[in-house]
Amino acid sequence: MLRRHHIPVALVLALALVLPAATAASPRWQGTVTGLLRYKGCMDGVNGATVTVIGRERQARSDAAGRFLLDLPPGSYSLVIRGPSLVQDQRVDEVVVMAGKVSDLGIVEVWAYERPASCVPDAASAAVAGGVEPTVAAAPDLPAVDLPGTAVAPASTVHENMLVRGSPGTGPGQFGLQGNPAREDEDALGPPTFAVGPQGGLLVLDLLNGRIQRFDARGRFLASFPVARAGLEPVFESDIAVSDDGSIFLVTEGDSPTLTQYDPAGKVLLSGALPPSFKGVDQILAGRGRPTFLMLNGQSVRAELGWGGIRAEGPKPGLPAGDVYVQVERAGRWSALVRFVAADGRVRRTVNLRSAIPIARVRLVGVNRRGDVVVAVDRHDGADDEATRAEVLLVSVTPQGQIAGSVTVPPGDRRWLFREFALAPDGSVIQMQSDVAEVRLVRWSLPSSPRDSGVGEGLVRGRILDGSRPAAGTAVMVPRARRSVAAGADGTFELRLPPGTWALGFRRMAPHGSTEQPPAELTVAVTAGATVDVGTVQLASQKTGAPAPTQPETIP
Image (cartoon, rainbow, N blue to C red; front, top):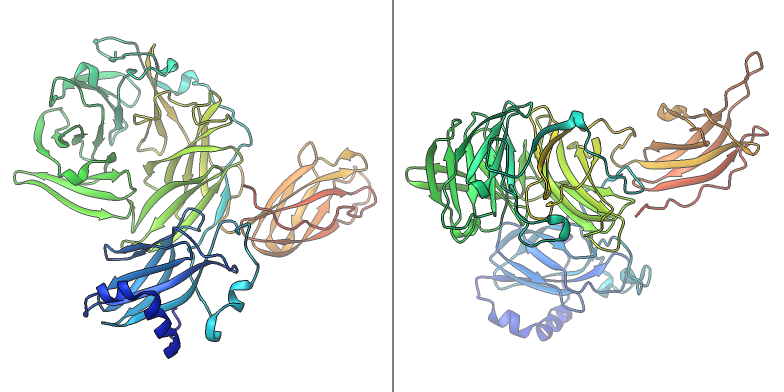
């Protein structure tokens, strides 16, 4: 909650001298909001941050000193602060604006992912003029979960996963193919998109052959029907979706974006031009009723075709998922964000997916019927995003921020330009792979994650030795948390715990007929989202010879 303080006359006069042009240019019926953004606990001003007003098309960018200014009509507002080094979607709520008045928030402290190198710790609070405490922006809940895998290990396409395998050609079950994507051929083209029907059937947009091909849930060819072309050249900026009643929707961008609706048999029902604002469509998805357009900026629009034209609803702050909306974003080389946003734009939860392998891109595949969000994370271990050693990690994330399942799959070759994944009704993910030789449609299931990936928990890990040998099978127990895990063959263990101070017990297996040894104990302090490495735990004399727990370190 924003603190309201009496502003000294001298401060108001000083502000008037600093901002004469802005206040003079503001209409009398408007007010002015200003403030000074600083990193939390630092003297450093935040340069280039964007301050956006929820519900208004108003935003400002902070200058080199961190100062921002906004002119607004009278009312109470919420400000959202974003920046390249800041925790996403921080807010300052209940900012009151009065006509002809200046509302100075003073120093607004914002949270950074990493403290700036030039930061002077705890200097900001001492520099507050007049003893007024700074306003601290509220950061959304940011649970962090670790993605599986420490090295690229792309999976192979196994026979039992294969649904469709089509060679180049124009016959049934064949596809139009052009160029060689393995040689980075700019003219390498193939089916740009596909969709999965309500019964698991597949529809592939075979655009070079001017048709949509249908396959059943087992990959057997059923039929095909033609698609209209707006011009002589096919438009590859296209996508298709199938609703629960079997209606097929095709959107083509090009110079004039259009939406065409087909009945389940492939007969054209309606077709119409989309508004110019629909340029930049990333995906089209359909469930019950109208199709949903997911835009490149993460927002979504629902549209309906009618004899009177297009009726659109939106934009909404992401892909609908129950009573919230979902957004995904690559936050950096080592992390990706999944945000759950309310209809008014408030971020309810942000889940930070941390990876030990560099992330090249993250994509939203969809929301399954359980409400889990399925994302595709492109990862590589080379110096650039086009590295040959690459993989795609498919991850399902629950609305509570837990990893429900994951699987590693090979890249689909044309993954940068065309749709590669679609959700099936049973929760599996269908992948389209395409190269110069053939087109493949492969089914992948998302098995449950082998590790407990609870929201807001920390990870405790170490290695248990019995003398010089790994103490395989030793039980690591936390009775108060009712959790336990057995050490692996090399003596290592990993255990997730909620934040707090916990006593770990290490009980090794006693030889048959011998007296059971009392458990060794070690106390550790766990922080949410952090990793505590206790090093080596020595059991030879029933005492833990491990060093004191290290400070929690966050895996990048």
